[in-house]
Image 1: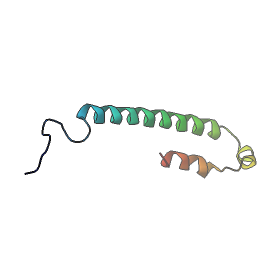
Image 2: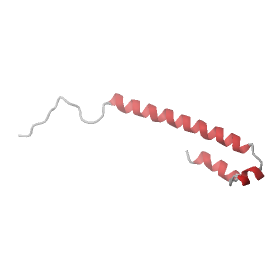
Image 3: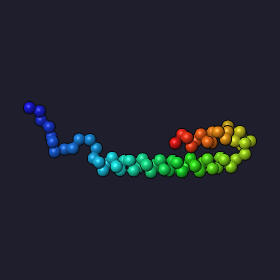
Image 4: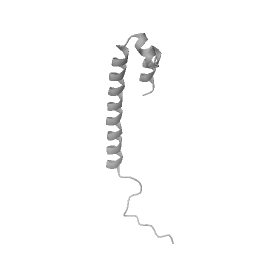
Length: 67
């Protein structure tokens, strides 16, 4: 006869999983906002200024696709 404690749920509680999901969602939103702000600033630079820091316009567009 196997002995199991049936009074304890297995795995994470649903509320913990929901809270974790919401925190991850908030971090993703903050990251997306930072990327958009960075893209906006870099887009305002001239091609020569971008070249000086080793970037191209395509690098700026690619930032958004990495999210």
